[in-house]
Length: 457
Image 1 (cartoon, one colour):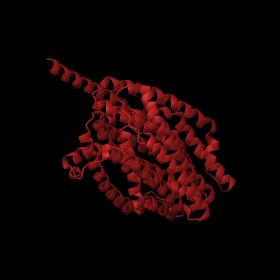
Image 2: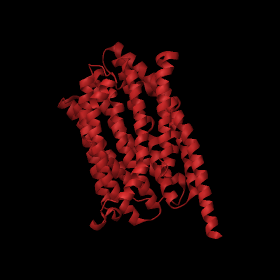
Image 3: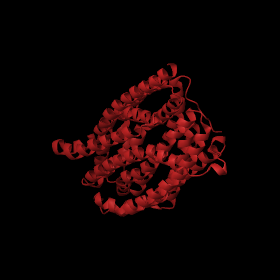
Image 4: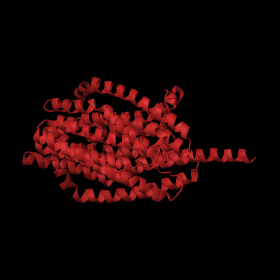
């Protein structure tokens, strides 16, 4: 049964943890099937197949992040409507968001298929992995409507405080994906296309579960005469979502530039980076979960004008986030070499070199993981306040730092410089986000104080 949670009262620590924990468990299962994907591909199909998937990782993330950007942007307005207890506005926002999501998906799919091969060529994709990458991404991009369906429905549920249903959906999707991975790749021998198909079928299962749960809520039962497309509201929703999507686009382009540089070092280097990037999701599992929790928490309390409560919740989020990051960092530094080794097979000398590259990259990221957690916490808090512009600017800061690092540092310290691109990108974003959050909160407090003075005078 759908669990609606009002976050405008109660202990911020208890609320954030109770909301974030199911998301975290769900993300663990999501990363589990991502890891199984990579292990099956790396061990069954070899380093070339693993490198091919890694080569398409940023292009895949570009399309996925555009979908997530629109879905999350639309959900901000839903959380604010819910926090203000405005059911009529919630229903209108829901219907308009749903129709916008369909339109956005069509546009994203057209972009993905038209740009697929030209971008891979532009990236200098090695010829031996080019067709494998195209086969994998073609299947993934064909499933864009499935990906949007899950992300939109899950974002609606999170906006009303339900993090348990997305958890159940992700568990079901993960188990389905793992079983189908083994079946499609190991038994049917469909190669990387089979791994991609398994992922999409798992996503479809999660979308169906979210849809069934959401339909139980009266909040989304909109009378036929109220299902029109509100153009003015659509403009406001796009104003919220476009910076979200553009922020992700900027970050993705920076990642593609990094991939271009890495491709110049050959298949082993690509495979090593791919192995670590598959663990990236593990590193930021809790950060993403805390971020979703804070977007909903801040959005609801902003809708209810509980400004002091917002600050308290964000500071609690910072403390919990930094402690969590430190624990994950310690685990990865101690056991990371064994973990990345599970993805890699092949000739002993090649495998050992690939593991060295992967573990070195993992150590650099793990040592500075708290920087990434601050990024998620402050970016999500700003988004909950309805500010999607400064998070977009932080994406631009990430782009500048990532690309500057990837081109300049290797000239000074060799390939070692490539490992620092991600960490310095996080740091650049943090400077923008922390400053923006406290400036924004100061302005909101001043505005609320002026409103109270006008009422009492």
